[in-house]
Length: 84
Image (tube, rainbow, N blue to C red; front, side, top):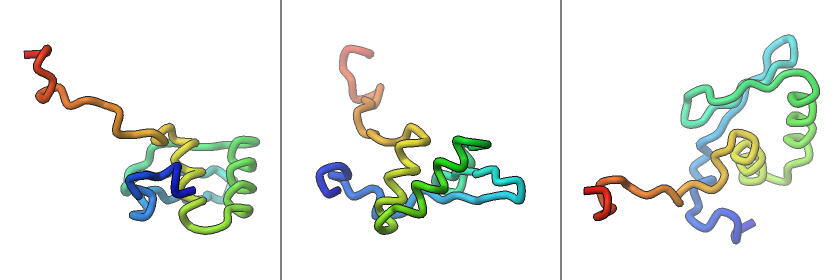
């Protein structure tokens, strides 16, 4: 797992989730809702969370589902000399 999260961003636990009465899952990133899972997708997610070894594994599952998995490749527009 250490090879996946090289910058240790998942140690900060930026992701969380809530489950409603009708089994809808709300995924949050740093306190803001970023994705809603319903039906089979929600059930599959909850199964993966039950099997997760620890908090970091749970964070990785949520990162992959939300699409916030490989951050850091984006360039800052101001730092790129060609854009000036």
